[in-house]
Image (cartoon, rainbow, N blue to C red; front, side, top):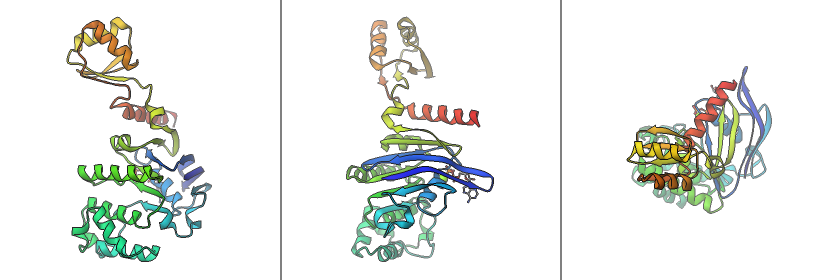
Length: 295
Ligand SMILES: Nc1ncnc2c1ncn2[C@@H]1O[C@H](COP(=O)(O)OP(=O)(O)OP(=O)(O)O)[C@@H](O)[C@H]1O
Ligand SMILES: [Mg+2]
């Protein structure tokens, strides 16, 4: 369990995060979304004791990071993959963490294998690509076999195979009862993996809940090769709609009503999805522009 309780943090006169409150539950992946400068990294830094909150507190399993007896055994943290000693070899980085945490040394090779760095273990980290640094950071976070993971933009720099691998790894971790707080700019990435969503903008939580709660009821994505027929079918059925492109629409109605309208109009459908492919993006931009308008 990870909890933020009314956490506020300013830098000089600027309030980076403002009264942030949310919970990440065991067995779930919480996707932490927000535009650049929204306060995601600041929140995570406060959680991990790297930055002191002005007020409020953030806890991991009920305690502040600094109060955890052996933090790396409780929570795996990856905040900045580039923040590694460039002169050390990948294996050395993990070996030092293993020593610090009191983890058996054999675990280092297991983790190198798991993250796909076995072949690069003797290379210096300064010569790693960004994706390789992320993989090393993920290995470092997992080394202590923690019950929680706090990852800031871990998919940044990963190739498509790496992104899919990370997704599987996080799913498995959460399914085994782990708690995951995961930030990303990549809405599609979060969409594919998160159970819960927390969206922040301008330092404030603007929306939170389960992915399904937040995305349900945001319209049905409809695709048809017959734009004229589809438009007519929407109109005859009295369904509000807007076009995404010449063959895609978001209908303000459920899938059954859209399907019936298409059938009545004799129109072919190639895609019908109540949690449309753009649902998260639409929600994100609605919320973020609301926040900008309120600021
Ligand atoms: N050490 C610092 N000193 C001054 N301002 C800071 C500091 N750290 C963060 N900020 C400010 O706090 C705000 C939130 O930054 P933060 O890095 O938390 O955003 P973010 O959501 O992680 O953004 P990004 O998506 O770009 O990573 C920004 O306006 C940033 O300039
Ligand atoms: Mg950040």
